[in-house]
Length: 201
Image 1 (cartoon, rainbow, N blue to C red):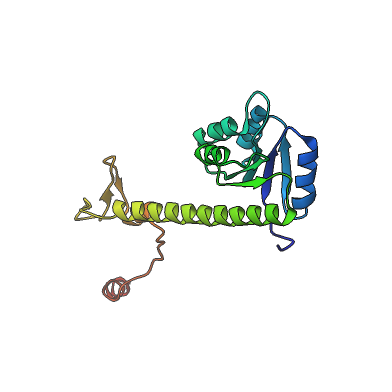
Image 2 (tube, rainbow, N blue to C red):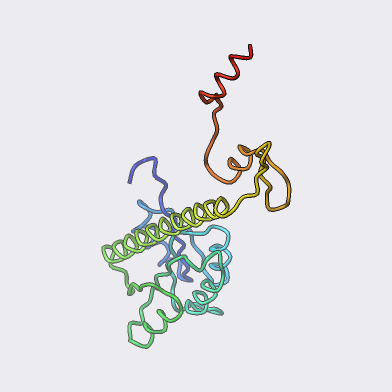
């Protein structure tokens, strides 16, 4: 990672301070670490900070990790943030429940530093790829919308060449096209107009 590249942000939601400290020790050199000790606090922090990835403890008082994850996935601002569950409960029922709640992966406790780092790196890379895909899709949709605005029949004045817009207003040709595309205009004289213009002087 270059010095100018921003570190990805991780949110650790765990009610055991020793676990938070261990995660920070393992991942701190490569990631910005935020933490919360309750599910409710994790929800609030995720809404405000929009981390790149969340590490979620399963067993927490009041609101466990499954319910916290489900609520994250219901909110437009946080539903695309990947959640990796941290759990000492490795039986199949718990793991299935984790995925059904919206988790993308899990890491067993006690942590193995190499495993935790590898899984975090993998899901950060996947999220960045998905974010880039969404951004490109949005750009394409915007470009197609501009093309559609300029397709079809345009009411144009036969004398002054103004174009009537969707609101019924008449606009100069260059204004209409500039507002609806990335095209710009530079002015000059075609050969016929140049002959007429200079012949009249």
